[in-house]
Length: 153
Image (tube, rainbow, N blue to C red; front, top):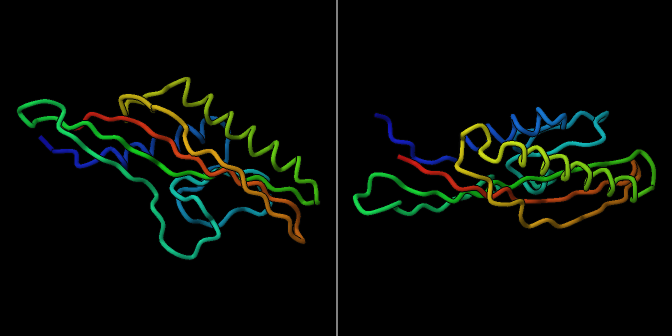
């Protein structure tokens, strides 16, 4: 029997699959975006403009019960929904970013186990909103964290 060290890899893979199935363009970690894409979700980063390392996910584990055979793991996967426009209208970018988060939340609600990768997604936490106006248009970023619980053996 192979011991599972952490649910993080399976949970990230399942989250990417869930978001992709919901029709959202997904980038796994730091990566280049297609400039024609007006909305994208990054899984495993909070700031796509950062040049340094940042936590993609974190977790903590406790023994499930006496006997130390199974462990419960709380996993937090950091994500960012980003939408931009080619003009100077921040409302469109903001509305599109929040609509994307709603779509992602709805997709998780359909299968809160992420295809069996975790026991359950607990919440989408830490929502905040950042906006940027530049010469190429407006961008709205919504960093958020998907928290879930897994049982490891």
